[in-house]
Structures are given as structure tokens and as C-alpha cells.
Length: 135
Image 1: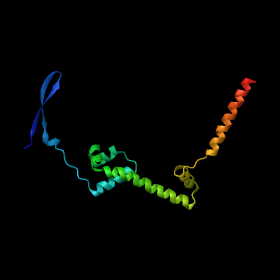
Image 2: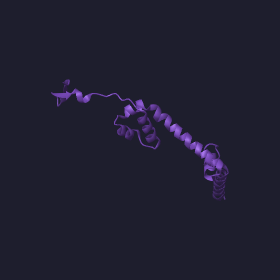
Image 3: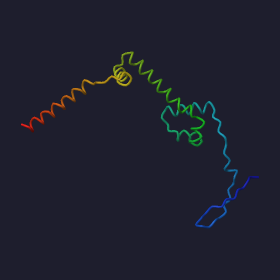
């Protein structure tokens, strides 16, 4: 036999009694398995939002974040690390685009010379405009 709870709900300043079956509201504890953890890691690394992962596991998003926090946090760092390692190896192997990207992002390399030339051109054009207005 199930427990029944009676609750008073306000409706237009009247109160009516609503019966709720407590057996339907039992919360089940979630115990993550290794398969579920691997699934969460794969989904999250593929860019699937946490809300969709929770729906797939048939749990709430709060439950997902509570039980899979390490998988969500550290998995992304691991994937970025693996991609960075592959990019670095491609750059060392002679891939020009990988080399340039690596130098721009990690080596803080830039085309400062091009930017300086653009600034000099703008400054010269401003000086010419001022000279033309004065003369």
C-alpha cells in the first residue's frame, strides 16, 4: 500500500485538497557506472550539451553535474591537451599551417611589422590631411 499525502493548494483564495500519490514521487539514487562515465566523456568531448547528456542518461542536469563533475571538467582539458600534442607534432613534421598557428598562439608570434606599417601609413595620411588644411 502506498502512502498518500494531502496538500492544500491555494486557488483564487479558496483552498482545495489535492491528493498526491507519494509512490510516484520517490527519488531514486543514481550510481554512475564505468560505461556511463565513458559515455559522458565521449558525449562532452564531442560537444554535446550537458542538458542533452542528462536526457540521454535519463537524469536531471543537477544530478549529472553532481556525479560526473570530474568527467566533465577534466575530460575537456584532456582533449585540448591531446589536440595540442597532435598540432605540435604536425608542426614539427613540417606542416606550414600548423607551424604558423603554433607560433601565433603559443609562441606569441605575430606580424607586428605589418601592423606597424599600417599604423605608419595612417599617421602619414593624417599628417598630409593636416598639412593640406593648414596650407
